[in-house]
Image 1 (cartoon, rainbow, N blue to C red):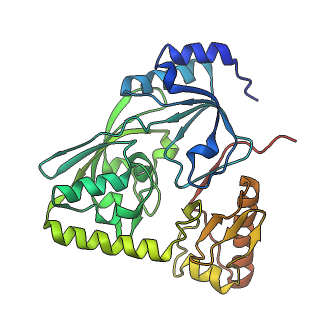
Image 2: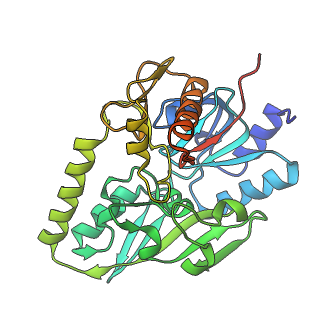
Length: 309
């Protein structure tokens, strides 16, 4: 079990990045869409690629556990929190456009990337106008919606590997498939991505984005904290329909509930704990399996420590 030397680690981190970028015992529920999760020993928000590299190398040298956190939109953090260093790249959020190419840093929201594309009358990222994650998170899981996905537009990416080395990788190098990539397996940290877009008509692009936004807002329970769609689509089925037909909508464990508006969403309805949220996910999986013989696989990532005691 990792035991943190708070003073020593704090001094090492603040030798790499500003003290304003290093928080101790930070409540992670303040950084997730579900509003769930315990504390991070160190919550670090570097401002340059070099700082990211040096933090990775420090983690390796001192054997400090290391976790990369996006904007927490497709994530459940357990109530025991996360040991060691939690890295958030939200300060790396620049988006640049050159002709029909877009270069977006990993901490930029993919929604903002789609809006920047619209402002330049570029087509290809309309599908992302309702995805709440970051660019880095979108590559991590090959995010997609409404028939589009990241692999359709990604050209290449700059990453840092487990050893702290910078690599430029093509889209093909990432093994992008339905809601998955090799990024977690390889331990890559995405720093930026280059997208190939097409010239389009502003009004036509905006019309598509407005339509997708309407569909999202009318069908999804955005009034409550949630992690978005909890389950991957099982082959030949729709997860939400299976959950609905299993009479699970409205079922609640503690403060976590299966949404009445969209059965594929589990919402933090009333101050839920992560443990309650996870128990409800397992209950949904078990019920659907028993009722229809279909295994629902989680799309949401569950990380962190179980609560002590």
